[in-house]
Image (cartoon, rainbow, N blue to C red; front, top):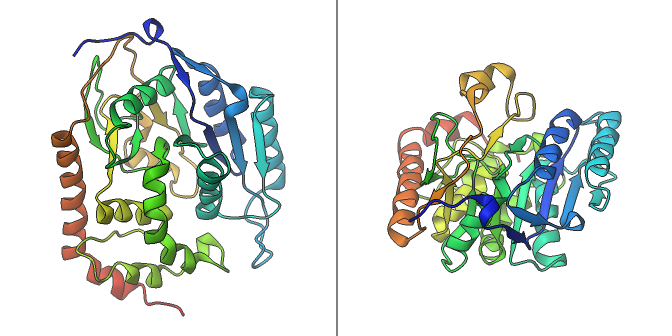
Length: 318
């Protein structure tokens, strides 16, 4: 296993790159600037897409975002990537359906075998896409791998050059294979059915939690991220993350974080690696088994120790 420099082995990025945006143009500007500064890759700007959500709920008429901030987000993207593609929504879809829209774009409309997805609060360092491409090379022949990311462990400062793997928890800046997405689609159908006809932020947590009541694993969250995490474990699909931080999470303000929570979790100390050469471990079955086992133990313990209380605290609304 040798260390390689991104500039010594540049890679052509064939996968579409899809950015999700709502009303945080300041964050999106940093994400776009990071993508424009990628090293060690050749990236076609026409293969970059902005999936821009709208402001007003079609279900309640409630304004969920600032139209001026939404317009500013589109302007930020078009300034950074004039040849890029914008798919803006006339209505507020909410997180889950905007993300699903991007997945369908990648895997149905574009029929891509792999796509790279970024939320607007994952700032990529200069080698982020190159790192994803290294993971692609090591994972495309392993059908159990669904997701892979390269933003690293924010709790520890892994300096490189050695790159190992830990469980991927947050779907922020990652690769996802079409083969895995198709397997997950049927499993996730009951979850998406419970989101229909209502705003994502007003979803029925109780009914969602009861989807998992008969499983040996569970989550304390009802988010689309949590549902996908459980789907992967139930289907035997792996989600892997580099130990080294090739990017950093910047979402101090948003749907899931407040400044206090952001600092309490240690994300204010998240640093992008400064090394110039990296040695990636292989993604062999033994390593994947260790990553998956760690995930499973966590979700089994939560199901065993806390899930009954979560169910009691969230009665189904309808």
